[in-house]
Image (cartoon, rainbow, N blue to C red):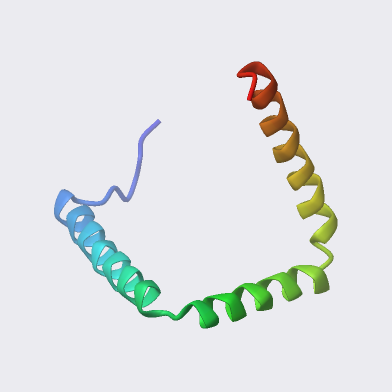
Length: 78
């Protein structure tokens, strides 16, 4: 199998550098966000999940996570 359109090392380095800049900006933005604003954002996301009908899938996942934690507690006698 021959890979076509491979990127050059310099292109990969430039790509990585750009994403480091983006990540730094996001970290700064998150640390500057107030707890009230973060809570409001969480509420918006939870409302959206409910409107899209994702709550059942989230509950199934939460049950699975709870079961895994309970198994770990049982194994380690916690």
